Amino acid sequence: DAGITQSPRHKVTETGTPVTLRCHQTENHRYMYWYRQDPGHGLRLIHYSYGVKDTDKGEVSDGYSVSRSKTEDFLLTLESATSSQTSVYFCAISHSYTYSIDSGANVLTFGAGSRLTVL
Amino acid sequence: KQEVTQIPAALSVPEGENLVLNCSFTDSAIYNLQWFRQDPGKGLTSLLLIQSSQREQTSGRLNASLDKSSGRSTLYIAASQPGDSATYLCAVKTGANNLFFGTGTRLTVIP
Image (tube, one colour):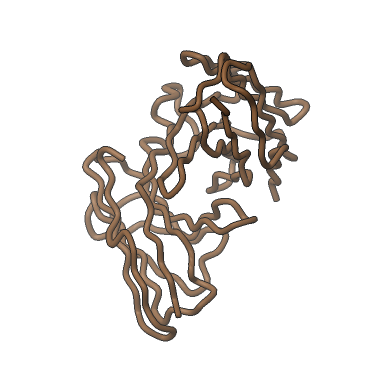
């Protein structure tokens, strides 16, 4: 997990409350991603960022918003948490987006995860 | 939509055995395929990445192959060790803004 940290690592909250998860990187990678992992579904992309203030939706973006005001920070916000958003959330970073002749630039590096429970 | 399947969902082998994990995908138009390892309660660690133009990649006791035309990849682990016990995930990068993951194979290596 060197170079990428997520906070908080664990959070329990109640339905209807706002929640913000933070991803911080020291690698100066351009691309950052938020995934959620649920049993039977694998990892699914929520939102991603391709630069400061540049973000876009992923496969399961409903109920989530993101912001990236600095290269190193990517925030995921649940405006009004629901029980269906109970999950483990992973942040990831990469140097390249789709293809680079340098295969190392395509490698996706993940944070340790944030476990969110919505009661 | 790209579908990624990993079979079996779980596998137990005795220590020292060579083993193969399978990954199949439905759309061959991929940029790359990546194999990850995930330990319980932890994040994902990248093991190997195969570019679409490559057929295989090796790292230590690990060898990953890619056959785009048939939509298959295998991860070969030689001389398995108890420390190899983990869940192994494959993921394919498509031309869209996504990396599609399989649900993983949970490997247990018995001492």
